[in-house]
Length: 132
Image (cartoon, rainbow, N blue to C red; front, side, top):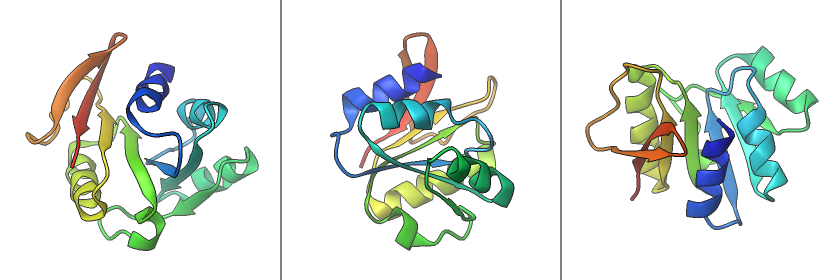
């Protein structure tokens, strides 16, 4: 999954905020983006996941993408998510459109993302991308 961090590094200017939605307890991509010099924030509906990220020195917020607190996302340069379920993918796309930033999704094998997203293969991983 670190290839996703590399892809974001290539596509997004290294200034501003990158937000991972649905981080869970997997922080490798967020940590790699921080190594690249990005300002990274993680978001999850699970308070324990956010506490874990904060303990690992990655700022985080508890939020529900079906009813997002837009203040969290307004300064974002990009949003990404790793293996969200299809319902969350649609909510992420709606959110990305509202704040007018690129969205990167690495789907679970077999999940079908929203049709508006373009599939790219980057270093062996499938990534669906939407750009404003």
